[in-house]
Length: 532
Image (cartoon, rainbow, N blue to C red; front, side, top):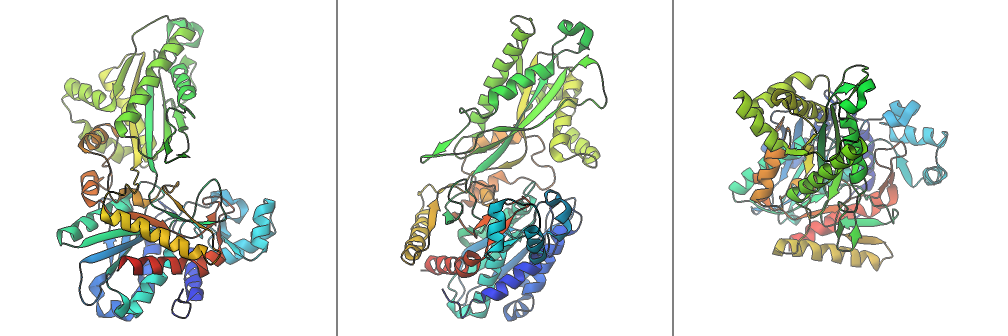
């Protein structure tokens, strides 16, 4: 590791200053403040003064907050088309979980001191007391990763003679919500491919996150996927005093929730590792006030992390459980056997267009423009599905099923291409050389948190894309979702990041020795190996 050339104290200072910039996702101006901070930190570097067109802000098309990514393109001399991407996200989650200390959470030194005086878990207290951990919002997820990438970019900008490939650094907005930032970056990557640039790989630097072995470093060869399946139950309204005259949509939904939550049919095992189960995130009945009526509409949506399952497989499972759950609810209510209608969102839209003569896509865009002021995109899309049920006068018992945003594809190293195999080989070499020095770093197939690496190459086919385009409500609201372009990219990915704990929580913290003494060397050595 080149301590004399990579200033880890400067990297730490940048991290502290960067954490001082509030970049909470979705808050007016916050993420752009983060982008501008990083822009200002680079613009005085001689390379970017001499090549101002290589450092710019990239507006995110269609973004209601008019947010921007940062693009810093360090081009090797002699010129080459071979390019390594460095990326990560600028945004953080909010600080509400920090309670009375929330205003200090953007000042890691003061926040760490304040936590030591607060009533916190013994493990957290001991780690902070040791001086080896630093707490604060974004200090692990993921401003430390970006600070390390910044240090690498600056190192090569000051030692351009050592760079044999181009380095493209693109910190993006909106990873913690709908991934609008990386979607815009995908458009840029595709434009570079059209200019014959060879995108060798993308390095992200998300913090280590795994249920076991939290104290070791990890390198990840892929990233998990996430989808948000929904089911809207349609029953028959009646007064509660005449309960058996109606059909409770809530009862139907409750049976479905029990059937799906933590169901092993959804839980994936990939290369011997078991991944998290499906879980319900929200339920809603659409009523605005108290009413003593049996609810005739009740919806729920789920979080599902997947590795290799395809969208059609997931939707088929939801359909299967929706059908059996409706039958159980009817049996419990003494309704006997009745035909239960299961409609996909695509089928619901077809019925709507046939009945009204209107485009469901135009209706959706207009509906979302109206309602996004008062609710988030998931509730807005769910309410739109409910409105379509009204329009076609859908009668129960029935379920409407589909997906809500956000959707993140999984991205794994299949060892098919030469570039994929090279990424794996270098990762193993980095780990072996550190093991000889007593450092515990392990190789994992899949990053278990959501990351922007998902968007660097869709590993499904045209049928999967068609199903998502037809059944993911609000897929192209805001920034268009570039599924076809993602499929064309096929960029090998790797995550080399810091060791962090409790991301998004009150005790979010960063292990400083690994951040300062290990991570920069890993990133630098990986890039140098990729150049060979």
